[in-house]
Length: 119
Image 1: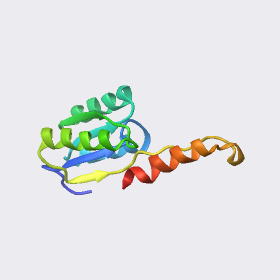
Image 2 (image 1 turned 90 degrees about the vertical axis):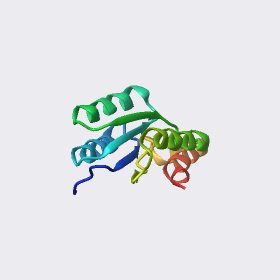
Image 3 (image 1 turned 180 degrees about the vertical axis):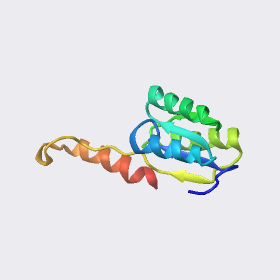
């Protein structure tokens, strides 16, 4: 990665796993980070880790399947940072079940979170 000073990165699903790793790496490269996650506990923890790397951070609680929450998320980020340069649509879920045990509701939740929310 290059120098990201002055850039603002938004990462959904940033409270853990790959999203957390992306947030911290982009912060190391100089970006200010909007940590967006459904979990306030893990999201705020990652936002604190970004601050420790010397970058600005903002935690925004968001359920990416809720379009109003996503619009509010973008507004909060623009209000705080004035721009968005990088957007990582990382939020995703999976079902830890045997395939034949996955219900239609489980399927719809996965599709809405993993595909529709990116739209």
